[in-house]
Amino acid sequence: MNEANTAWILVSTALVLLMTLPGLALFYAGLVGSKNAISTLSQCFIIACIASVIWFVVGYSLAFSGNGMFFGDLDKAFLSGITIDSLSGDIPETLFVMFQMTFAIITPALIVGAYVERIKFSAVIIITSMWLILVYSPVTHWVWGGGWLAQMGVMDFAGGLVVHTTAGISALVIAKMLGARIGFPRSVKPPHSPVIAMIGAAMLWVGWFGFNAGSALAANQNAAMAMLVTHISAAAGTITWMLIDWYKNGKPGLVGMITGMVAGLATVTPASGYIGPLGGLILGISAAFVCYWFVGFIKNVINIDDTLDVFAVHGVGGILGTLLCATLATSYFGGLGLEGGVWEQTKIQIIGVISISLYTFVITTIIVMITRSLVGLRVTEQEEQTDGLDFGSHGESGYRL
Image 1 (cartoon, one colour):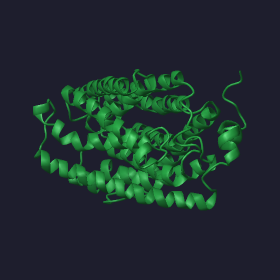
Image 2 (tube, one colour):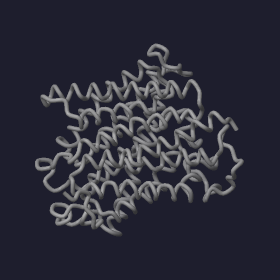
Image 3 (spheres, rainbow, N blue to C red):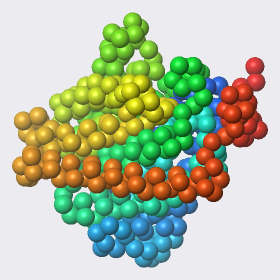
Image 4 (spheres, rainbow, N blue to C red):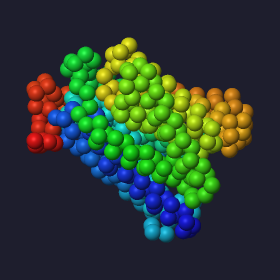
């Protein structure tokens, strides 16, 4: 066991959990209406708990055991055979289980942003439970667990495919099948607290160092470079989105800045272990332009109410970073080098994006159909328009003024 590496992954694990609890929860809660803040916090919180238990029972085994091309086996269900002395590389396997668990927590929590303010709490629980077993765990096996994409050599350092593409595609599917909020898009209320959202966003930024630099699974120069390029991409995404916002709307909004930050972070995630600082800058700037365009396209052209832009920011960002990864990994852009040719690697990246997107789309559609038949998807019109989900679903109020 390497004690330095173990110490760094212990810290990284805590940082990635911080991204969801309370980072993402606060980020999303600040962006919804004041009557739906408790609901949004509750959804993120219960997802963290559900994902933790499912990962222990079956998720880790399906993702990281066996030699299957598409699915792991159940040899490590309930963490069978994993003891205090078990190693994964040169860190304790118990730590690797926990580190990967935090990724399994945040991925379905990201999807919350697509369905806030109108979904039943029971539907969230059912969708999340099935999704972790049928979508997240298999895709993780494909990419990180020795599955078919790993064998092809797909590059996804920290989750552009595993986390952001799966979450983004699923968000779009659920938002479409759930239907838009009443009054969308003309009479939708603005975020009730950009202040709370910014606090959550800042926690996401800090936590992302554990997400990307921690994925080196070592305290070494690769982790240091991943941390640096992650930070540069976040900063570049923020500045670029702010300037676009300023130009189009006349004022630089805080919500736009923190959205640009998340876009930069999501886009650099798959490439963070392969690129240099210039690549981080390019990805951050590219993320802002491309994701900004997709926000308008999803809402105003195809009229899907992906409430907090999960697909446009996470899905598009993760896909963009995955596709640009091979090019920016070359020494020409200051990257760490590429074993094969750029086009050969890019073709593998394209195969990864298409296969994971299609699989996620189909399975998520089936999961939502099953959930709709079991408990329904939407709250009543009274809950959505008058009571709010805080009181209607949870019997509580976020604010008593």
